[in-house]
Each structure stands twice: as C-alpha cells, then as structure tokens.
Image (cartoon, rainbow, N blue to C red; front, side, top):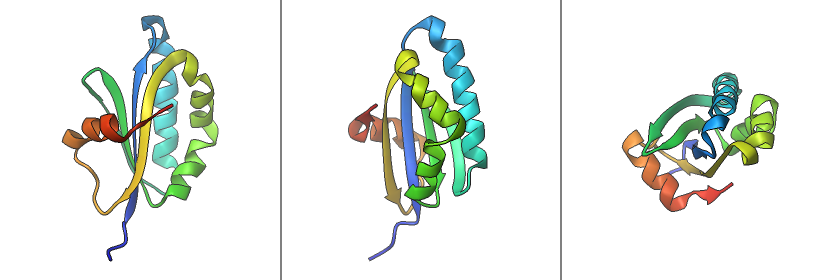
Length: 114
C-alpha cells in the first residue's frame, strides 16, 4: 500500500456583506503570509472560483497544518470569521496535489461547514 505523501487543505469562503470585504482581505493576506512561512508548508495558493475565495495549501502532514491553524494571524482570522464570511473546509492526505480545476468540486462535495 502506498503511503500518502502530503496533507492537502482546501478552503472556500464567501464574504457575508460588501462592507466586510476590507476585513476579509486584511485577514486573508495576513493568513496567507503566515502559511507560506509556516514550518511544514510546501505551498499555499489562492484563487476565486465561481464567486468563492479558495485556498489550496499543501503540508508535510496534518500536524504542521494544525500548528499553523491555531496560531498567529490565522487564529485571529478564525476568531473574526463568523462576522466576516461563510464557508467550508476540507483536508485530506493524497499522493498528488489536486489541480485547480478539481478544487471547487472537491470543496463543494466534501467540505464541512465552518
């Protein structure tokens, strides 16, 4: 049996109200910067697909992703999240990184509401 090589995290967020957009972007940019420099992060990208702000991050393992998730700018963003946006997240181990053409479908079908 092949051992999965990387931990994939996909988020998809939609801003609740237009006046929340500046707060959304401020927190998104800070969280992206934190992710890109976090131990265990292999890559972090963002794109807007069908009106949903998606992130696709790749980690050495789930523990590295969790360490990022619960500290710094991302922790602050999660605290503010209920007022700013709605969304879903999905994380899983995989031998390959999903292509951006697959991200929205994976998120829609397998994501859990946060």
